[in-house]
Image (cartoon, rainbow, N blue to C red; front, side, top):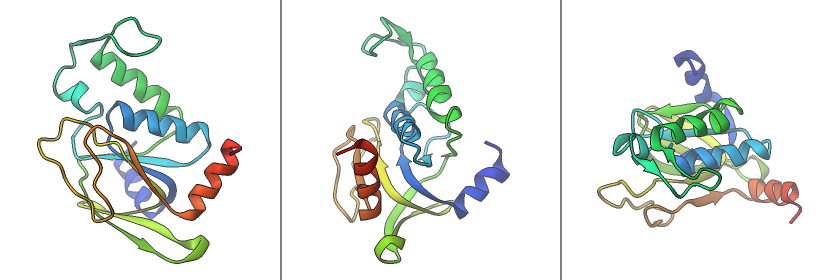
Amino acid sequence: MDPASLALDFDEVRDVTVIGAGPVGMCTAFWAGMREAPSRVIDSLPELGGQLTTLYPEKWIFDVPGHPKVLARDLVEMLRVQSLEQFDVPVHLGTTAETISWEGSGDDRVVVLHTDGGDLRFRTVIVAGGTARSSRRSCSVTTWPPGRAAALTTSWARSRCSRASGS
């Protein structure tokens, strides 16, 4: 996505913001797209793929269903095409999440992620930070263990996802 379009994303209220552009973050964006939920991805790293890209892009991966073996860099590219390109997901690389707050009330309530590049508004945040972090960071809402995805939603998003999934 070009810089001008990415700048416009700061004015959008999306259904989902994913913190982390590794495999779990991109898979999360894929499933948001499958449910027709507009999403965005942010990551403090300068490129997609998390530790697959930064630590071992030439390593064979053997535990991805449907792929007996796949190079890490190739898996990142396949995830980019399937998850981000297919659903036109804006990706804010080199963007660090700093704090979370809320605005509004009732059905108009949104989550605000304050980043070093500006504020992003949405209804659900999913933290997919991976295990490559050298230290754990705590969030004022709760602390999630590294390598686990966690979600913080508004009541609007929970009800919308429940209707979409039939639960």
